[in-house]
Amino acid sequence: MDENPTVVAVAEREERCNRKLRLRLFRSVTDLDEVRSVWQTWCQNPNADMDFYRLLMARDSKILSPYVIGLYRDDVPESMVIGRIIHERIEFKIGYSRLWANRARVLNILYGGVFGRLSSEGAEAVVAALLNALRSDEADLVSLNSIPVDSPLYRAAAGVPPLLCRDFLHAAQAHWKMGLTAASPLGEASHSKDLRESRRKMRKLFADYPNRVAIRCLGKVQDLPRILSDVEEVARKTYQRGRGCLRRTEKSSWPGR
Image: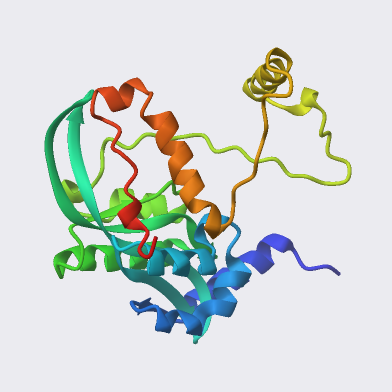
């Protein structure tokens, strides 16, 4: 007779609870080699890819250090939370008017940087570690970047910190994804109204300016000067630049170029 799935799930949950949860912090780039295999196996978002993470650590002078949390039971990895401490400019604005600005060390948890099976117990341990970073003056504030509102980490972040440390002004944002299989409908009928409208505008652009429009893919390191130049060419014509709320691209943030 097959086992009842509900009974099996309860038994597995009780077994996990009987094993003590242990938290480890990885604070240097060399320490990350120890968790490379697990990191790359669990990662499903290119924003949190380990090689990309390490590239930014090496290239962006504003990133001060890694802040990676590993959760283990009996030395077996259960989940990971990927973060880093960044020296950022924090601004307080009303509309486009800047009332206050200062530099701060921000402990930023990456978008897509929560891996594995993070339980409610584990989420509370993670939030406790983040609060400890604030108490020990390692960071001035913590930023949890786009965590799902139905996740244990969201609930822990909303309920564990002291009242004055909680964020009461967060806003939910919809994130969409499309699964592509051999049977997936890839025609325009399966796309959203906004995507179909953008494709219509692109076809009109090609029709109105024949042989004058080109699409190029710039994705290599050697393309960076061209990318920065083109972005600046567009940005300088915007009304945001004219009002002083869109700063000029800082090439100095990419050392060696």
